[in-house]
Image (cartoon, rainbow, N blue to C red; front, side, top):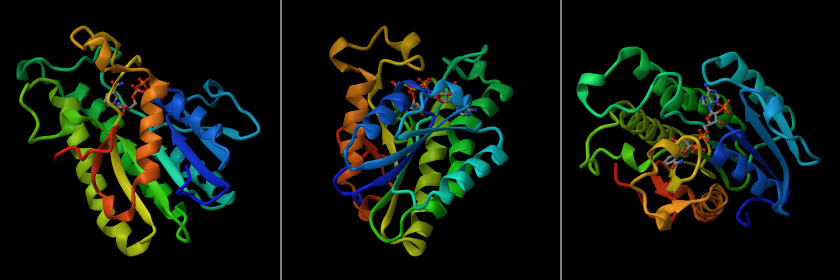
Length: 245
Ligand SMILES: NC(=O)c1ccc[n+]([C@@H]2O[C@H](COP(=O)([O-])OP(=O)(O)OC[C@H]3O[C@@H](n4cnc5c(N)ncnc54)[C@H](OP(=O)(O)O)[C@@H]3O)[C@@H](O)[C@H]2O)c1
């Protein structure tokens, strides 16, 4: 990423995921990147290398996030931090087709992973962002979190959790502009990407619109390379366009 200082430090939360793993690999292979801290619920699910330092964290456990950020901060400032975690289905939870399926426990789980957890990561990582040159905190959001763009209905919890995430990002960006004018905080829509998260729902997606994780990650890193603090607070799609809120 040319817009970051030479020898930059990256952090990926969710490096075991389809998109998170691709982001981690591409950051580690970037000549300008000195070090990637790669977090997963099980640190063993991420391969360590001379550039990649795995760490464990769980979005449901603030202490684990705080401890990880303390360890990362001891190594110096962070230039790019990406929250690549997310939850749509699993363990008996699936996206709602009707309001009759709304379930409080399932909603809590979806909101925990998609909105609350990334907010707590932001709480602990924002203070580590480089203040002497460009730095970025990005969280993977989704176009379906757009309220004005919602014409299909369904997926109530996932949509609402991503809308909440987008509002948190917008709110953080206002404070961040005062505290660290060199930094930006954005949401990212990765496109429709062939991962475990999307696999049960790919039936109606034309092959031409389904991206490989590597392809999406390359687009997302290009978007992050091009953003400036003026973009802070927005949700940007993989092609650099703004996703309406
Ligand atoms: N794929 C798409 O088409 C698509 C479209 C729009 C938006 N997105 C967004 O892109 C992001 C990445 O999605 P993906 O497709 O790469 O999904 P994925 O392959 O299912 O990866 C999800 C990641 O989230 C992590 N995670 C879940 N719960 C966690 C928790 N409690 N604590 C820590 N980590 C947790 C998973 O860790 P474990 O390995 O430990 O489970 C995994 O690393 C998500 O925010 C998703 O909403 C994806």
